[in-house]
Length: 68
Ligand SMILES: [Zn+2]
Image 1 (cartoon, rainbow, N blue to C red):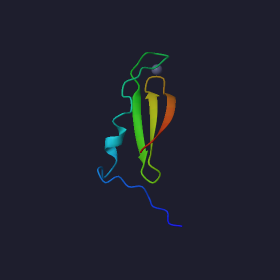
Image 2 (image 1 turned 45 degrees about the horizontal axis):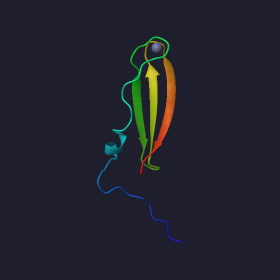
Image 3 (image 1 turned 180 degrees about the vertical axis):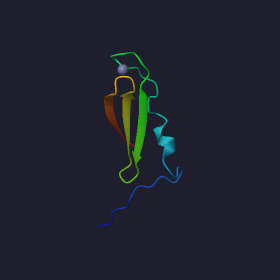
């Protein structure tokens, strides 16, 4: 059985796929703007989104987006 790896020919680094990630959020505790970190894992085509408040040093959420 042959397993073919999915490959996106249109985007070399898959950066085009992370634009849908929400960019602005505010901390529930202090109202400051959260810093969003986006890491991509090209080996399994997943983007991980992490929101962090620098003031509270609080990581509010980590979300995984599967890219297709
Ligand atoms: Zn905060």
